[in-house]
Length: 157
Ligand SMILES: Cc1cc2nc3c(=O)[nH]c(=O)nc-3n(C[C@H](O)[C@H](O)[C@H](O)COP(=O)(O)O)c2cc1C
Image 1 (cartoon, rainbow, N blue to C red):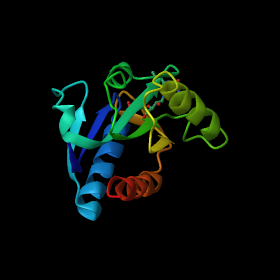
Image 2: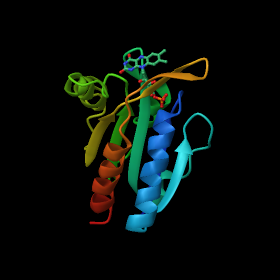
Image 3: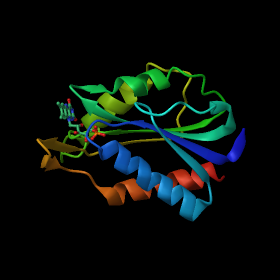
């Protein structure tokens, strides 16, 4: 297991989670000199997890649920790893609904995987496109960047 390596595994349907994952990767690489691999859980083969000390797992939320491939990924044996978890959810980006969304989509999800003791969790806003047109976008990339910095510090401790 390499303390300098991080894997960011994500599932996206509308692209918001992927863009957050890419931003996090960029910051971990450029500011913290971590070697980062990005894996789209829908499309790419899973690399050997044993090589990573640091994991970031991210997924979108639709119909009140975090995407399935993310839930499946959380079943892996992640013992001994530093795990960070985030979701992209329109509710989390709506003023007044953030706390509820964080409990429902982050805390209640992770409660089903008691072996995971995350070093950081966050619920970001999301983006809804209909027929290619953005109808809602309450993402906050400054918040994503700040969280990536927090991860960089924790992963290089
Ligand atoms: C069909 C559909 C259902 C959705 N349901 C929810 C929901 O239950 N709660 C929520 O907070 N956001 C919901 N959203 C908004 C998504 O969380 C938002 O699109 C987010 O960006 C999803 O992540 P992704 O872009 O990585 O797929 C929904 C969006 C769509 C298109």
